[in-house]
Length: 232
Image (cartoon, rainbow, N blue to C red):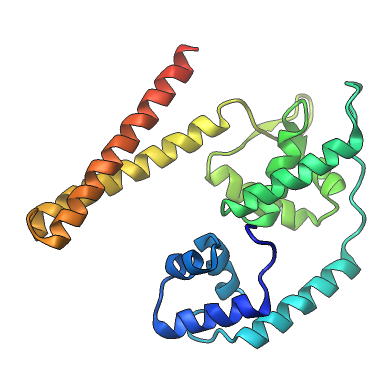
């Protein structure tokens, strides 16, 4: 998280921003934080209409104490016989998980995805994930369902067994870019329509028109990247 954990002063600024009617993006910009960080902070502490800075800060401290008491030590990461430094692998695993969380992925989903990503086979069963992450089967199940819905992993049957395993592959970010491309093109089309309805010569229409041009360039860049990737 840019700037570390939210402080009580940060939370006072969030409360003041909500009172002004500011959106998460604007509050985040003023604090130098991602909008997703502000959204999660407000959502878990009463929502926009009931957010209180002091109460949120105390609740966060309480959750942190409870987490420290309940969280078991991180299990060792198997070396796999490749001569890797286990501590370096653990450190990277933690930093990559934190990066995914910063990008907006829920923490448990980020932990599951990273656990699969750093495994050479790219495939683990639910029992494997429970053992490695030391979490409940229900937590793994919910995280897997979310990641599967986002196209970030797939299920496959373990040969000769009734169990399933969860798999990631080299196409994970291709699917993510394709999803972003579809959303970007929808926004570009809507922005163009907004410019036409509001009038391209008006300030509001010009704003939409400029957005449509930028989004069209981004879409073209996405398509070029995917074309290069597929051509090898």
